[in-house]
Image 1 (cartoon, rainbow, N blue to C red):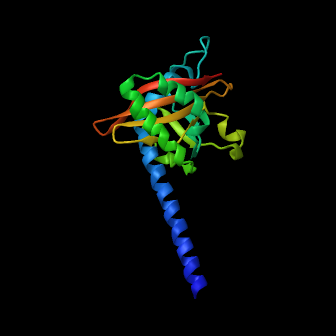
Image 2 (spheres, rainbow, N blue to C red):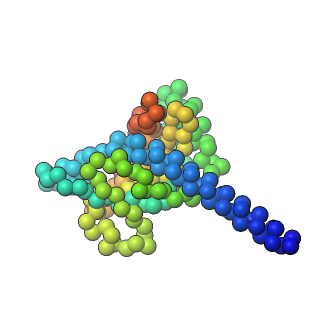
Length: 196
């Protein structure tokens, strides 16, 4: 009887943890949804790639453009040195708030699934999940891939990192600072962490 009660409590605890991460993923997806087009930009409408080069052709069709999105939020701590350097150069009023948000990531390394279907503010982009296990067939028609980090936020600001890649293996990693304005998250600032 004691074993059954212990097992029951362990199952309840595991479900509570999974439920917390599911709801956290939904909150983070909501923030990403609000600012998706601000972060990803619509330059691909014209060039059919998320990272165009100066000599790319211009397209005028109105078709939707497919973008592969990672179904799991990455760990923002992978860019600790770069992010700390950027925070140290921010205006004093932003430095404290953004620094506090980034500090939250020190104690939260849990992997969170991104409920990517909740991201609907995508303009002409059509999202589909991509992972290393899904193989290259999924990405043949994609104009690029996007990977978002965990989102750390309070009632006013949010920070996250996005990796934006084109099929030609060029890309950029950016830190985004978002601001909650009238209940919607909008891009306040962006900082390049890496470009290739």
